[in-house]
Image (cartoon, rainbow, N blue to C red; front, top):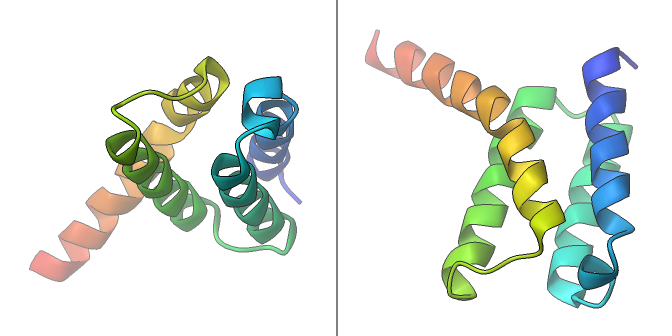
Length: 94
């Protein structure tokens, strides 16, 4: 497993250890499922993209409120997700 995978798994684990996340079943389940996907070798940028989408959906349904650790996680992976979206968009257009 390369460094970016292990870094993201570490960030997810740290976020899952946040008491606010532990007490929120929806966030806990969502983050755990993406951590498991990474541990099972799913493509990094695809996981980042889907995870940012899941966090965005959570924010919309919860009046744009989430624990700080979740927002920090989102900000840390947003670049990888936007790169993936850009590549997919480029391929679609051409």
